[in-house]
Every structure is written in C-alpha cells, then in structure tokens.
Image (cartoon, rainbow, N blue to C red; front, side, top):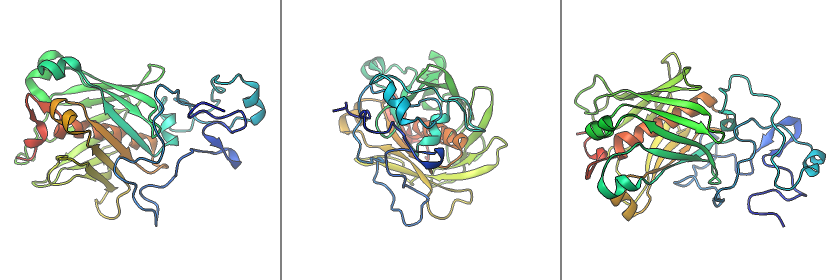
Length: 315
C-alpha cells in the first residue's frame, strides 16, 4: 500500500500521462469559464486533503511523459526524471503553473507582530489544491516604511520556487487609497523573471466598488477584477470576480479572501486566499493574478495598529 498522495508501483505517476504526450492532473478540470459548469464552492476545495511536507511532483519543471518501465525501474519515493523541454513563452520557474487552475496563498504568523504589534515583513506560502507548497513569497522593505506607512507602504516582494530561485518579483509603489482621489491610485508591477515585466495590476476609480484592471506588459487591459461594495469578511469569504476586459459577462475566475476563524481574524494579521483561473490561461497572467491577490491583501485586509485597513480604503 502506498503512502498518502504518492502513486503505488502499479499506478501511473502524477500527473497522469495521456495519449499524445499531454498530462492531466488528478482533480476535476472544471471551474470558471466552461459552459454548463457550476462555480466551485468558496475556498475552491476539490475533495483532497492537504498532505503536510509532501514533495510536489515535477515542480518547478514542466511535465513530460514517463514510461511505465522507467518508472518501475526507479526506487520507490525517488524523484522522477528531470524534464527535457520547456513550453515556449513560459518564464523560467513558472512551468508548474501551466498544470493547475487554482492556488492557495497562506500568510505566515509572525509572533513578534502578533504579540507586540510591531510590523514585520509579510511572508506567505503559495500552495496547490493538495496543500503542497509550490512557491514562497517574502516582502522586502525597511523598518521605517513598514511602521510609518502601514498598509500603504511601498515594497518589493520576492516569490521563490522550491529550489530557492526567485521566479517572480512584485513591485508596489506608494499610492493613495481614498475613493475621493481618482489620481495616483494603487498599482503593482509584476516581473517574471525579475527584470522582465509581464504585466500590471491597476486600481480603477470607483466610489462604491473596488475594481482593478489586469494588464499585459504593454499596459493593455486583458481582464477586469471587481470586489463587493463592503470588502469585509464578517464570518464569511470575500470574493473578487475575474471577468473579461470589458468587465461584463460570466466570471472566468476569482480571488477569494477566506474566513479563517474569529480568533485568528481578530488577533492576528494572517490571511488566506484562494485564486482560481482557467487552466489554459497565459501563465504570465496567472502570475499577474498572484500579484493582484497580494495587492488586495494589503489594501483591504492588512491591519494598521489595532484597526484594519479595509475600514478606510473607500472612505
């Protein structure tokens, strides 16, 4: 009998190779954007339970077919053969994103910040639907900026893969957040790899609703993101719906701030998010949506002293 999450000697490796050299993940391929397919429940749970500290097969390289003979020749638990090709146009280190249609982002608990309220650099773990860590993100700025500017602070955020290679860099300048000031609104630049801009997240002015434009490298609008009028999660999730570039029609994805329990919400600054997008979405836009998730976290759910930033964003 094999261990949880691992293939047995009589089962194909994960992901399961299919005819034609394509690979299929072992979870439903549904979600947003497919006709007749209902939206998944909040949190994007697909029936799998997280397996702590379990390695992720084929991450961060692309998936290649593995013959059953070569698989059985390897010792049980040994890593599979290294990939031999990289999909065209995929930034290095982001190959794994081509295989998935949802990710989970969990902010780590900072004891110093939780106990005395001293603002520290935020740290996050980025996981797949099985709860396996695929990337880690760390905010980079100075002590004065964090504690004087609070949730409005500028920062660089480095996202690294499991081999500790920086694959994405997020750059957030200092910007205004009041709905009465339509100039100098929030934005974030997404680079993958660092130094190569792949897109931007820009706040759209609206007096009632939090709206954002997901843009490409040339600042052309690709998608729209819209949240609820009151972006607060009182005993429930907060959903930001992803739509086409005109902002109308059926949602094709979602960024969801997940309710983590009364005690954690009140006494800590840690947040959990789920991001869902079409499986065949451009991997660069998947990276930009990750940047949008972090920007939303700082704008609406980052605590400033004893209050939450979301109370003042649209006031």
